[in-house]
Length: 216
Ligand code: DX5
Ligand code: ZN
Picture 1 (spheres, rainbow, N blue to C red):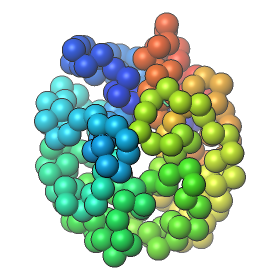
Picture 2 (picture 1 turned 180 degrees about the vertical axis):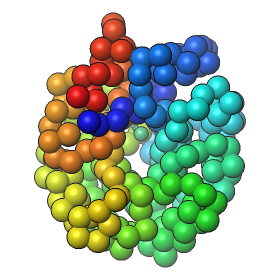
Picture 3 (picture 1 turned 180 degrees about the horizontal axis):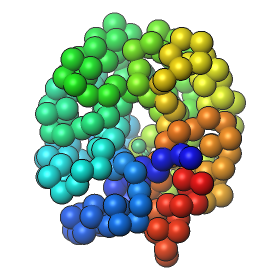
Picture 4 (picture 1 turned 90 degrees about the vertical axis):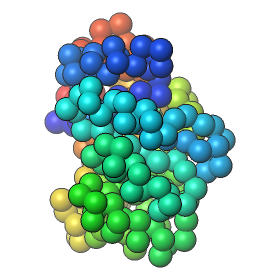
């Protein structure tokens, strides 16, 4: 059974508390929070204040996806704001800084993950495999919700699972972008443990039923 992490990028920002509380009622597992800086991706979203504000509202794990340039500069503040899982992009800095950032996240008592943009091959993750608790495979170009799922990322997902089984079998895989009740099955079949769903979750007429379909 897979976990679902609804992305609050598609929530109603004027009713965030209501939407966060409803996640648990719908049976969702994690809260996915997309931080964008307008530099690493061509969009801006939110930063520490929203994570801090949401932290006391829920006991669900906060899964914070940093789409920011040189994330090492801010990992401490995101962990202190309340992240349980912190994901950084390997394209966002030099390898030595990415490795140091992963160590820093762990030293702060948080789970550490890396993310790969669609054009980044599975092999680019090799230096980080043993330092990760999770790898996030993007199935859209990061920056916006509501884009079309890239099914051609599935071989990469499968390959990462095989690579991890050799060196770090407890590391899990997350898929993010265009996940809905149709595209979730192929993600699970290719090794996804956690599925992020933004627009499809918030648009669903029956969110509890949607959650069950994704977890199936
Ligand atoms: C995209 C974000 C995603 C986004 C997913 O850059 O990382 O988490 O919110 O949205 P959907 O599910 O609508 O593709
Ligand atoms: Zn995301």
